Amino acid sequence: MSRIPHSTDLYLREHARYGVIRAADLRRLNVPESTTYRRCQPGGPWTHLLPGIVLLARASPTARQRVEAALMHAEGYGIVTGFEAARRYGLRNVPTSGEIHLLIPATHQVRSSGFTFVERTVHPPEPRWVDGIPLAPPARAVLDGVRRVRKRDPVLALLIEAVHDGLCSHSDLCAELETGSRRGTALPRALLKLLGEDIRSVPEVTAAAIWRKAGLPPAKQNVPLFDLAGERVAVPDLWCDEVGFAWEIDSFEHHYRRSDYRHTLDRNARYTSLGIVFLQTLPSRLKSEPEKVVMELRAAYAAAKKRPRPQVMLQRPA
Image (cartoon, rainbow, N blue to C red; front, side, top):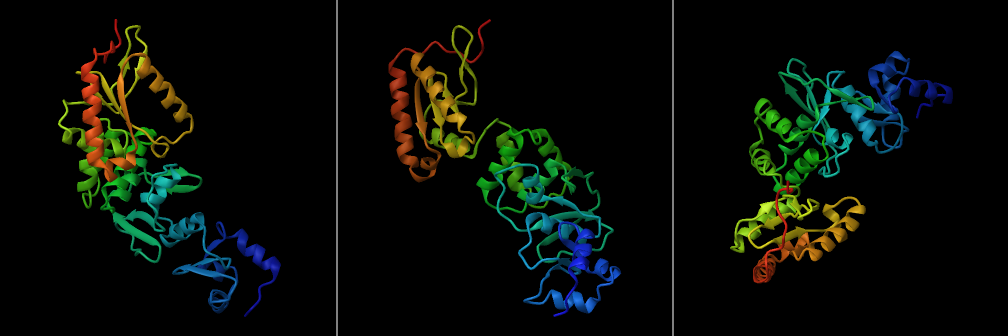
């Protein structure tokens, strides 16, 4: 195995990005092609990542190194989109994927290879630069990811998080659906329609279906309640205004900050002080025990119907 002096190795790293470099650049730095080939062989000190792209280490590449390699593969024309872009925007509900999805101009002839998925587009978006990486705008990035997923819950979870974390608006996503590629958009299109009803989490979508199955009067979702003094009481997941009955879908999994636990206790205390009958249900039970949940809903509704309706309203009193 040919050896490269330590000083030369440091010199090569100075010309790399996060340890990633083109084989063509190695040649310009006077590293023979045969040397690069040998050093990328099993047991060698370097790693071959993509055609003509080398990692100057014998290790699994980091997420940043994979992105750098993909951008080099696109020869400077690539924009990172899909789930990798969503993660770099700070979203958490991003399906696991080792793929780097790139957008490139339709006239640029680069093909997908290895962990890089290349998609040509006639109208490439203006990138947003985050930590030195060109990212597709948030709505485009999210939809480019979810339109390649066929399972409902992960798609809905990511759309909800993107909207409620303020990364992009519901209208941004809808506009992107209308102007972007229509491949794979049937599922996100249907789920965005649900989001338009201000449903805040995947369990609440399932909960709405179970409520209808229970045969109870229509319920409102995520509406603020006020007491006679005009103080806001809570925003229940589902609210039956006819009898003053609140249904909450509560778990730490779907309330990301620990401070939300204290808020939940405070909310329950307000419900109790105002005589509001409320039912708390774990999200997991919506799928594992739907029939039992239906029975609990009917029982809680019956209890609420037996007592005077609490003095709460859907609008702050004048």
